[in-house]
Length: 96
Image (cartoon, rainbow, N blue to C red; front, side, top):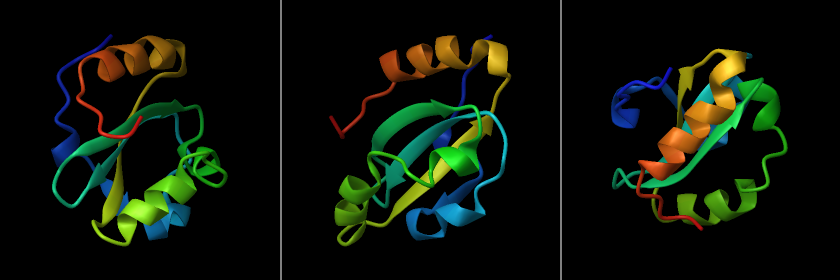
């Protein structure tokens, strides 16, 4: 189910271009320009999730100083929760 994923090699969009995210289930990573993983999450529909994400305003503040991008890996719906737990537990996140 889980596999090694390098979030820095995944497809991504800049935070301000999040309207261009695909409509797919995915594990996603918010990453700043210094390659710090700020946040890890899951979405049954990535585009919809980021329309009203609770962290958008916090990430927009960070984006003023260090550009933030959203990287993602498409994932199966059945394994999203387990995958999210795995990547949260195995990623050093800078956003609490």
